[in-house]
Image (cartoon, rainbow over all chains, first blue to last red; front, top):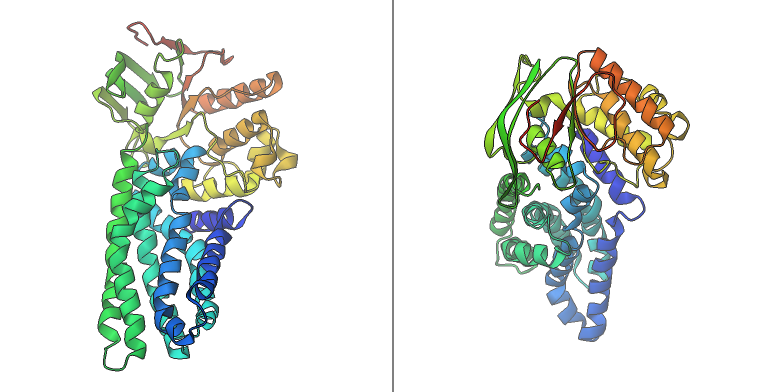
Amino acid sequence: MLALYLRELRVSTRAGGGALTGVLFFLAVVATMPFALGPDLNLLARIGPAVLWIGALLASLLGLDRLFQADREDGSLDLLVMTGGRHMLAVIVLVKCLAYWTACMLPLVIASPALGLILNMQPIAIAATSLTLLIGTPAIAFIGAAGAAVAVGLPRGGVLVSVLVLPLAIPVMIFGVSASYAAINEPDPFLPPFLILAALTLFFAVIGPVAAALALRHASD
Amino acid sequence: MRLIAENLGGERGGRTVFSGIDMSLSDGGALLITGSNGAGKSTLLKVIFGLLPCTLGTIRLEEGGELFPTVGSAAHYLGHLNAMKTALSVIENLAFWRDFDGGDGLELHSALEAVGLGAIGHLPFGYLSTGQRRRASIARLLISQRPIWLLDEPTAGLDAESEQQFSALMERHLAGGGLIVAATHLPLRLADTRELRLGERAYA
């Protein structure tokens, strides 16, 4: 399984892998925001966590449709699905999700403090948003795996994957953003939405790979 | 061990492509599946491997022992596609399949030597020619031990010399008690093979 994780990381960081695409998109979305909204620093600080979460969510969806499609195109998906009982397909999917998260979503989390500065966010808000992104983004990868598995046989399935994934990812974003706001708005408690966010991630870590494995089993033709 | 199919049929998109296949293959046996385009050669291999559901009849493995309870666990499948990442080097690709499949066969370098690619293991897979890619994916079969080889047009893109090399590899696999089921329309130059012709009702 470690071999699969390392292979996925290598493939996504080499030429054409697309690990940087997400970060550049995230950067573009967040950096254009102040230009569109005008130089109202208070407004920027107020909407900062929401903008970072929207940017991160959309950037994570960018490469998701390739999660299984690339393997299908070179024929390795057949061999990953049919391991003859040596590996569980759901575990294989989980490992691929973790590798995708490390290569494409962890950079977003790392870039978010710098982008928070662009949005004139307070240090505590930046810290809270980065923390919620760190805890919340794996859930998007797990949901996305199920979407990507359903659309694996479709050429140009990217839009379909986004449409399938977004409704399920909305709760993750809601609790991520509300936890970030709770950290700066005094009476609101930070912990309850944050814990629900963590629970969502754990929940989808189980449901997502199992659903994706089911979809992949029936997708081979 | 014995690979047995009884009254096996295959479906593609709800249409029965072939049906009524009976076969029995034991240690050291090779079966050549021939037939015109669309006769269901690849479908049959996929049904045997377990990639497609077995809708008609049965396929089973006898005397596989604890190590190989099902056909899928006992078989190497070499499909049309090579199952290698173009961005990774040949060695990296093979090292991944070694770790993933268990890797109790040849060393990476000796496997590459066996298919005549010893000198270019460091190149990205995407730089290789069609025949070289095929040979690299044949090397995958040598790295992990599996008694059954399911080969779909294994010699596509190979030159005469590599074909001979591959025949020798298959002979060695059969001599070691392995089984081969190959779908092809080119002769495989194996000494002793049975043939299953799809398209008419067939027995082997």
